[in-house]
Image (cartoon, rainbow, N blue to C red; front, side, top):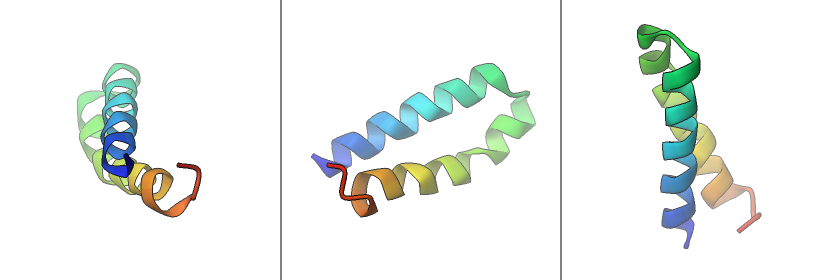
Length: 47
């Protein structure tokens, strides 16, 4: 379940970044998006 939540959050935030940010900013935002998705899925105890 946690892996599924991670990939859903990562994909959704990545798509939002692709639409909202210029190309290079979206590429740079990939690492913070990954960290945020990991925290939500594994560390937050929400799921």
